[in-house]
Image (cartoon, rainbow, N blue to C red):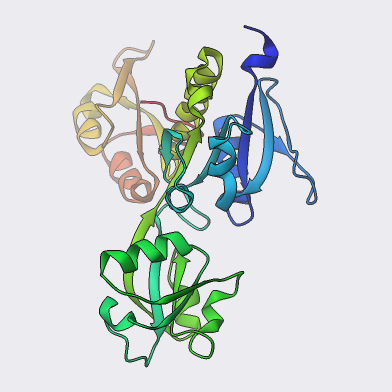
Length: 294
């Protein structure tokens, strides 16, 4: 297979997810560089071509085959009704690792308290299809208008309710809005066209990217602990250490001494290091992780 045919054209999200996506790829081993005005970033991998596009339109270009693959939210795949192959789910967002949500929000003192109360109301949203599907599910007729942005400030003067994306709910509360209902939860997806998935070279590359990205996510908030301990303290040290399976224990060249290492959650390290020290552990080292592949 030629290099041209096997090169993957990969779309990455421009905007709110851009920074966190670059950071995730760096942890996975791919260094991406771009200027603030460039939509053609460079990556230190000759088998990849990167394009920056808005997440809202990514799945359409992947479905059409203009991109081999792309990263976008499950919500925009649903909104665009795109027929694409889902390579993997990636649990990250702009500010954290929780799913983002599309919610119906109304002014704090609105008399709208259920989906039925939206009958005949005016709703603003960027996700018209998602909002319409919600109303259809509840048998409600309302006027949905596309919002070009700043949707939160449109209620109550311009619209009665909004359907908006939120990660923390802070922006909604800051604009005196309350959440009426959650319509859809969404996580980032690595998707590709069916043609790209059928291409042996491109499929292998996408599977590699998926493995490394998920490995980078799995390693977050985890560290590697390494320590030495004598025979007398080994059993107690091992009992203190949590691990994925069991701590790795190796005998040292000096008789009666062992090297112990394991992966633990970073937040518990401050609790267990004093316990390990009291149990006889020496030379305790904490190392950060970039990737953790099961």
